[in-house]
Length: 269
Image (cartoon, rainbow, N blue to C red):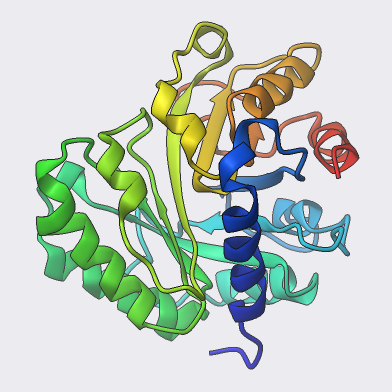
C-alpha cells in the first residue's frame, strides 16, 4: 500500500456533490477523464506515461486509469504494471488507478470477485475497483452489488467504486451506499459515437450529482470528439472518455487525439 491516500480528494468530491445537488443540471463544475487503460505498459514509451504526462491536474479534478492485466489482476504480480501504477501515482494525488474485475451481471461468485479485489490491493495498491458487466436489475442491488461495494470500500479508506452496467440501470444502483470518504461512480453508457447521438437519459438522472455518472464513447473521429464531450456535459456526466478506436477492442490504445481530449476537458475548469 502506498503511503498517501485518496481520502481528502474523495471527501471534497462528496461535499461538492452535496452542495450542487439542488441545481446539478446547471452546475458548471469540471469534468474528469476515466481511461479504460487495457493496454500493456511497455517501456520506455508506454501509453500509461502519456496518460499522465499533463500532470499536475487542476485542483479538485482527477483522472482514473483502469488497470486490467488479464481480464482481472492476472495469475501473478506483473512488475511492468507495478511500475505503471507508480508512474500514475507520481503524477499527483488526483491521479488514480482502479483495478478491473467482472461480475458476469451478478452471476459470478462473489468470493471469486473478492479474491480478484484482494490481489489488486496486495499487488498494485490500487485506489478503487472498476466492476465490469454490472447488472441493471434492482433485485441484485441488495443481494450482490451493495455487499460488493461494502467489501471494496472496507479494503482501504477512500477507496472508490465504479460500476459498469454500460446502460442506465435501475435507479437503485445510484443509491448504493459507500462511506463518506469514498465515491460511487456508475458508467451508464458504453457504445459508439453514432449511438451516443441519440442516447436517452432518464429524467431521474438529473437529480443526482454529475460525479456519479460516467460515459465511455468509442468510434468518434477527431471532429466528432468535441461534440461527444459537450453532449456528456449536457447529460449531467462528470467522468467521460472518448476515443477514435473502435471494435473489437476500443480500449486497446489511447485515442489519436488524446492531447486534444485532455485540453478540451481541462478547458471547462
